[in-house]
Amino acid sequence: MKRKKTYIKIVICILFLAAAVIFTIVSMEYEPSDSTRQWYQILGAICIAGALMCVFGEDGAKGLKKAAQNFRSFFQGFAKKIAHKIASMFGIHSGKGYKGTGLITDYQDISIKVKRNAAQKKPQKRYKDMNNSERIRYFYGKLVNRQIKKGFLFRCSFTADEIENRLMEDKKISSSSHILFQTYNEARYDIKADITSEDVEKIKKIYKNT
Image (cartoon, rainbow, N blue to C red; front, side):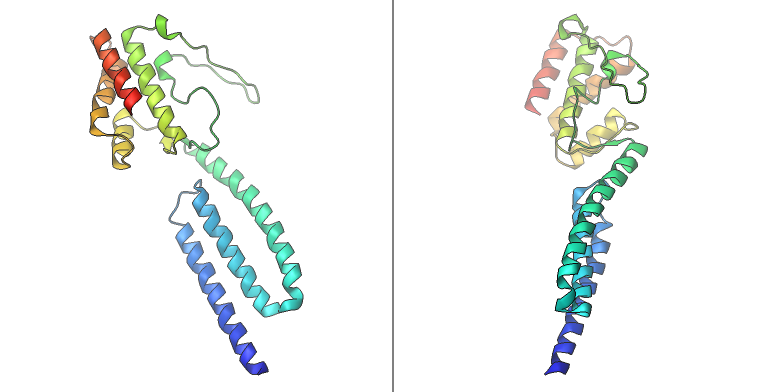
């Protein structure tokens, strides 16, 4: 009977270790900043703890449970900091935890050097004071910011065309939004672009329906 229990513990231990390996491999398929990856890693850690419980037996269960809880708290905080650092290094911004008036503000053509630990807010031009090109860029910025808040992973190096393609691939926007990106490129890069009030109203409508 005792030998049978030992065999059962060994089998359970192996299953826990196998599950830990699987969770670890699956977690590597996700971005470092993705919370799903962190949860898979936590599940892997729990499986390892389960394997250790099989080894140490019931006497060590309470100690392992407490250790697992402490490890989880530490891991979550540590993983969050690491993910934030990695995201910052590559210019990745996620909508989760986002605060502020907007990430895309290039329609203002204003560059301000922000001192470390000093909160500075860029002066924003009122909509009624913008010309038509600025209004097109304004709606483009608001559309991208909206997608960022919905979870779109944005990189500072992305062009408008790249953003459009990625949003289309993720089915976050429809083909009818193409004209918004096309008009934005004209307003952004062609100083002689003839942007009319009708164009602005058309882009405004597309933004509201996206």
